[in-house]
Length: 441
Image (cartoon, rainbow, N blue to C red):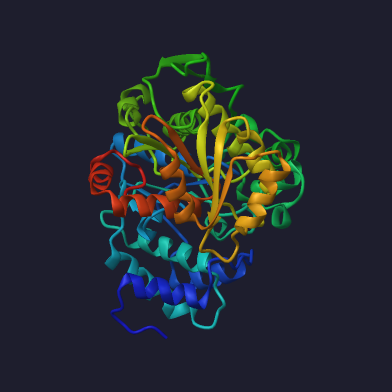
């Protein structure tokens, strides 16, 4: 039991102790039963669900920013967080308060006793409770699927529109060992005749078959919309083009959000033209998405890349920014990931490796990470007990003008970013006043 009036730290400790975050037990029955009892599963406004292997969080953030710029009141739910739990649930671009979260947890706890909810299920239901209680009422809710789609807790909500960002190999032990099998799981978020926005990376047989079966009107990247120049300065939708200002976010996520905004305006709530909202994303950045901070003359790049596809994109981005110059890397990942696939694209982009342990039950041991590097003929690898030690070793090796890339997991980025912000108040103050879509709260 948890005492009434407990603060957020106590609530999170209670939920984590009762239902550890590393426990994954896919299925909708528990969430459906408790959500129904709590009367938090039905919304009067449109709901947009975003699924995919990579790019979900940035797509949610860009679309929310565009809709807010158009004057809508927007609720968003995404996971995991990087610095503070409050990042997961936002109202109009602002993290919800501790007291709002505590009230939501209290409501869920009334129905959750003895029901065996996982951490993700519990916190997802809390997000629904926050959105139900929001005042003024929300105009649209955007939900990021946690894992897969068909059996993810978010999928108890029937969406008005679906976005699928990408399909690549990840969580194979739960979702399947082929892209086709994984796509079938992602297709579980579809409902009959709702609009679907589909990434070119998600154009897979099983998903296309599900779209046909559900009679979904679909807009596919590369066919119905896309950037049409190498510099991402011109975007096209149904043969109409608009000029796009420079931006700092993944182009795939930006393009999908543009398409979703356009389709939403045509089918749900009439909005101002997309071109009128473009300045809202011009200087937008996100925590942990190729985010660069300067510390003691060294550029530290944070990226949550944690599977083959996202690591390949990270390596490409490093090449575009640094050319032939190599970076130092601080790396840690979870043991259930394909570690070889994570480092393969990075081998040519990194001169010196620093590996350390994460404070997480699923973390790969530093010795395993080092062994993989050695097997790939990496000779400049420093092995540390902790990720903090690894980062400090990288900083000791770096000289002003160097770049350090911190990658491999959300937990990796969160740990180092949190350490850096604690130690450098100038960075923290800059982060608090910058336009970050996942704020420091």
